[in-house]
Amino acid sequence: MESKRQQKYSKLIQKEIGEIFQKEAKHLLSNAFVTVSGVSMSPDLGVAKVYLSFLLDKDKGMFEKINEKKSEIRKHLGNRIGKSVRIVPELALFLDDSASYAQHMDKVISSLDIPEAPEEDEENED
Image: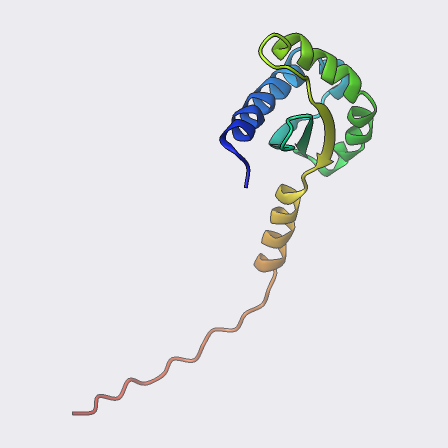
């Protein structure tokens, strides 16, 4: 269970990293659409686990490119929040594939061949 302080920092970092991807780090993404789906902080606020979600499966190769440049992203984050925090957290990036898993499960469920249930005659016993 995260403390209020961890939750506050998580929201701040999620918002700022999302804006960094939109503005400063466009060159890293080219045409990929990335979403910061979540951030969780360590108790000492020194490490931020950042979960990234990609719109298309072919964009997953971008994750490695972004992961290699996480020091550059941390530098931009430091420029944005450096005056309001003591330590700019280290970034640990993770691929959040819950959206693609949900699409997969939706496809599997819709392709199931489920026969209609036979109608049972209702008998009224008085």
